[in-house]
Length: 282
Image 1 (cartoon, rainbow, N blue to C red):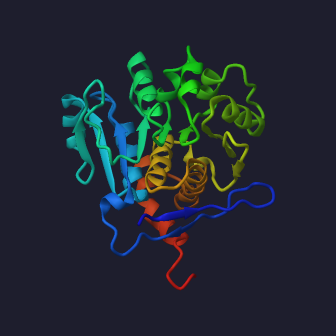
Image 2 (image 1 turned 135 degrees about the vertical axis):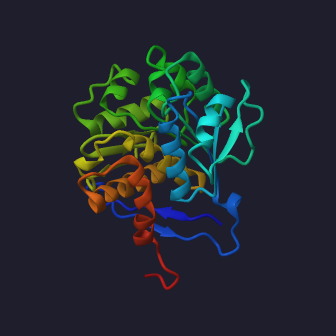
């Protein structure tokens, strides 16, 4: 019922262009997955909104931003096709049909953030963690690792990696990502000039299809949204991370100079169209 993503690696573990199969003709929005993104606080909602928009455009049939009333009023001034939902402290009201979560972009570094991450992780739900969702565990990373599983994607850059994995030397991103995935029990998407994706079962992939125009504010939030939006459609975390990273890089080649995070989202449909396997197999 959902769009199907596949991603092959060559002999050097380099990610190749993903192939996408469209959803069934009779699919409805919930068949295509439901992504829930935790909103940032007032005056800091942009990062979560970028992630939510990216998840929607990449194919998640439903996307919801969850937050308190002041956060949602600010979000409502900017979004239309993304739903808004008030949160409760115990998160009892979260729709059971949610198939992937995003926690971190602009959310705030706090004990409350860490608690929300653990609550979702312990339910075994698919989740992408970025930014504050990672740094909130700087002083107690083992707490995250104890709750993590193979359908969680951690998306650190070098600074976040060093805070979450202080005992792992990261100058060699490949070996560092492998060690981090084994230690954490989650898929690790280690961002850099050549982004490396490692799974706790030993799978490893390297993305060389990107350029430096991605180095702009909000780029990582878009990538996190893309990862979660693909997972929401039923694709496993490792494959979702590989596909999202390649397509994120392809956007940079398509646009080049002047690329911004909102423009990245606008270009996702073009990338999807070129990856789509037509009904005649071509």
